Image (cartoon, rainbow, N blue to C red; front, side, top):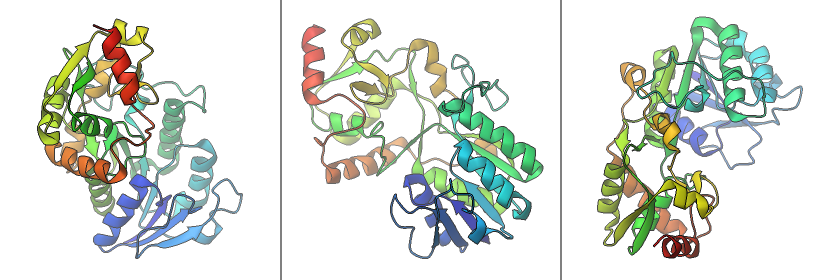
Length: 319
């Protein structure tokens, strides 16, 4: 199989390229190369995808094209240049395309946001899906990942918890009642994208793991991390009053969602499983992430989460 990956040098992209290579595919990556090299065995065609001639060197017939971006400046020109020569096309979108986050077990037929602002993440992905479907029809597979986790995650969202709970002591957490965690290991996602491309699967799929009650999530992470302290749940109103933020980013408690949005972590997995999707046990992912966190430094500056000092201050004030 001849596969063209639009990207391939970032975190998920490199994992997808590795899996394609392992399966025997001939892989070309179109990217600037700013995120790093492509895996050994792949060919990198360096280009800035904003340039008018970016696709000239990769025009032709491809068994598979994998689009990893939703940026309008990238998606449209790639479709114009490459769609006619692609036997199969995979668009990696996001589970953030849905208009509502209060419908547990919602599947791919749920209403989408209307793409009125292409600078917004959800809008850009809906627009990319629609443009791709209009151009490719039955040759298109759209993957809608939820929270992608695993070693090397640049967002620090998931890794915050194994790192934090490995240190012991009093660990600040949101209230867990009615809340869930739903993640997919980057290795499971990349393996599925590779196999789905080879098998020519088409349609739409929420590429997510099974929803797990948040209390069970903390219990499993604690067990792997050897946590010997206490997880101290604090009400949303108190956390917000102390400028603790939802989900991700500085001063956040990662994976914490407003109660109005808890179904964002309860998407249906049916289509993904029907298309051959498989996910490893959470404990396996946590163990891999914790090893990676230790190698990178448990106390390093992070893109998401609370610093130790911030956590102590909130715990002290919340007594």
